[in-house]
Length: 378
Image (cartoon, rainbow, N blue to C red):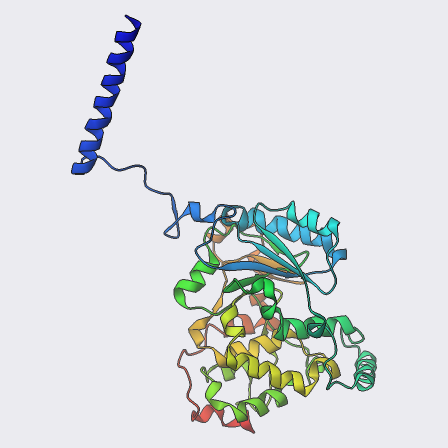
């Protein structure tokens, strides 16, 4: 009896399966549940260890002593975004990371983390720099009260971020990066993939806040930029970007720059022949050491002139804070996913007027013969 019942049950199940298979072949029933989609992508693509829709990573230049500030920043970006998306982290340091730092940061995420040491030639004085002169320049800037006037490491950092971070071997496999620093805060849930957003729209550089630079840190930067552009006018793609950078048609620089402690960008842009030639020219001019040229104006001038208008994007919907400035999305809808105060957003302050001035620019691109570029070679 037991054998007969078991045989009958097996036969019945087999019959059901065969019937379902026949219906599925005719299209009467779906083949299975539809995948859960995010931005049109199966969310399974965002699982830890799985290749993402875009080859991208968080890039972090950080010191071992900043472990706790780094963990705080990671907790913010994980809670607001990356716990769902699982993009990897690449940590870079001019000295080897300690075991404590590596263990502490790895514990903050399910995503892959890698740790790299910066090559000495990317974090030191190039042969053409007179170090005695550089020291004298630092002392003179200190007498003027310039921030970080005496710091050599700050200058190495700015030069590295300007011309070398994208060349590190750990970034070879990536096309986009998102820069994160210790102690920053993310005040809004990010329910979409900014990397995928940029990739689909051809965006090469993204920012949240744009400020005016301190003139005493870059007295000859614009002179060096104009000399480069006089030799390479064909590199300029967005002549209207000049009015974002200059109030007098290119004669002088107004200091507008994208605040680079937050930036999401295309590594292909920084690896391009145009950008590499631009950086090489600035590097030879010596201003990273004889003055205190920051990577923010260096990146920003390049993005404003060498990219098309629609290749630079204000991520106004990403709530972000780096002391003392914040980007807080405006509008009641944003406040359902944010804890920041929109009235305190940098865009309301004159020093950060460059933030909303960029999207207001005309979008027309440039040619080498554009009359708006004449002063760039003056």
